[in-house]
Length: 125
Image 1: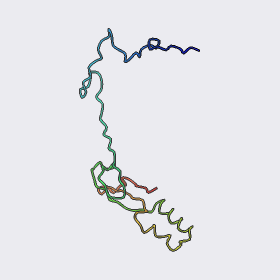
Image 2 (image 1 turned 90 degrees about the horizontal axis):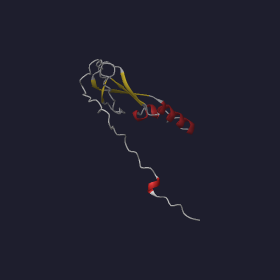
Image 3 (image 1 turned 30 degrees about the vertical axis):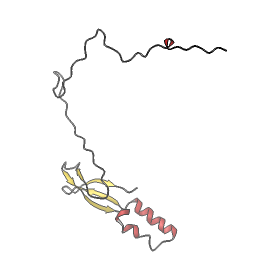
Image 4 (image 1 turned 90 degrees about the vertical axis):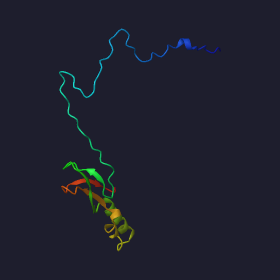
């Protein structure tokens, strides 16, 4: 049985990027200057809130559009109730209220100090 003789000449070459032979160059685009006949577009700023966790953080309030350092308030959430229920199932009836006394088990509400609206809610679970 003979091995097939594969040479590089039998495979067509890679065509590469298309070239603009004989056509006009693409039009020049100047950014910041509106083209004639095209209405000017409005610019929308998107503010990405940094990862607010369990400590106050600096952010832009979406309600009053001010840069503020948030006020935090701890509220009982899903993790608090799960730990309480787990301790009650194990038999620690006297200790099952402890998660309601620990801030590290609670959710965190971040509020704007100017308008008092909730900016972000950090949930433990």
